[in-house]
Length: 301
Image (tube, rainbow, N blue to C red; front, side, top):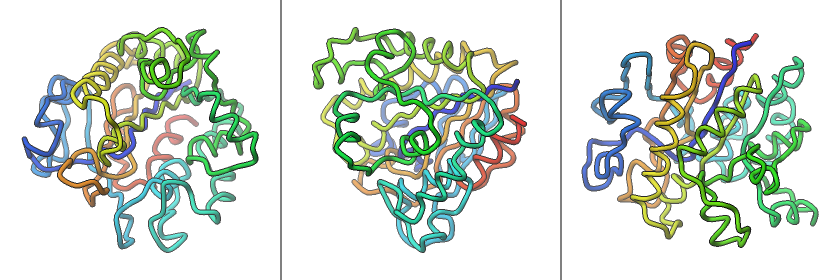
C-alpha cells in the first residue's frame, strides 16, 4: 500500500516576485519559506529542499485563452487534455461532452476498479443535496466524479463525527453563514483530522477553493486570516504526516490567486508541490496538468 493524500487548491499559480500583488510575497507563507526554503516565483519556479519539491505545471495545454477550472480539473483528474478535446478552455463546470470521459477516466474510478479504498474528504451542506434532489446537475469535476463513480459525498453529520472537513478548513463559514452551529476548529486540528482520514485509504482527496474566490475578488473575509488558516493547515500536514509511508501532492488547475492585480485567471504555471515517499519521483514526471493522474496512479499499482 502506497497511500496518497492529494490536496487540490483552486487557482494557485507561480507568479512574479511582487510584494504588492502576489499575496505569498506580501503576507508570507511559511509552508513555502520554512519547508521549501524559498517562495516560488517566475525567477524560481523549481525548488527542491530536504524532501520537498515544487515544480511549475503548464495549465494552458497548447490552447489559446485563459485556463479554466472545468477543463483544467478534468485534465488533472482524468489525465487527458480536456481543453484540446473540446477545442477551448471552459469552466467553472465541465463541458457536457466531457462527462462521459470523466465517468470513464476519473481518478476515483481508477482506484475503485482496482478494489482500492478512496475518499473525497470534503463535506457538502444541505443546500447542495437539495440542489441534487431538484434534478439540477451542474457540478464540479470532483463532485461529478464521485457521483459517476459511486463515491459517497459527505454531509454535515460526517464533519461532526470527525470523518470529513468543510471546504474552508475550520468550519467557520458553515457556522456563521449557513447556520450549522458546527464547532469552529483550528487549522492544525483540521489537518490532523485529514491525516487520520488518509491513513484509512489508498487515495484521499481534499479540495480547497477559497484561493480562486480570493483571486476573483468574490470573498469578503480577511485575506490575511484566510491565508494564515491555509498556511497552518498545509504546514501541519506536511510536518506531521508520516512521509516514509505517504506521498502528499498539492496541485492546482490554473493561476489566479498569485496575482491580485487582476480578477481573471492568469497564464502562469500552476503549482505542483510534493512531499513524502515518492515525492521526487512524481515531481520529475509532471510538466503539465494531463500528467498528474498518471504520476499518482503510477505509484499506486
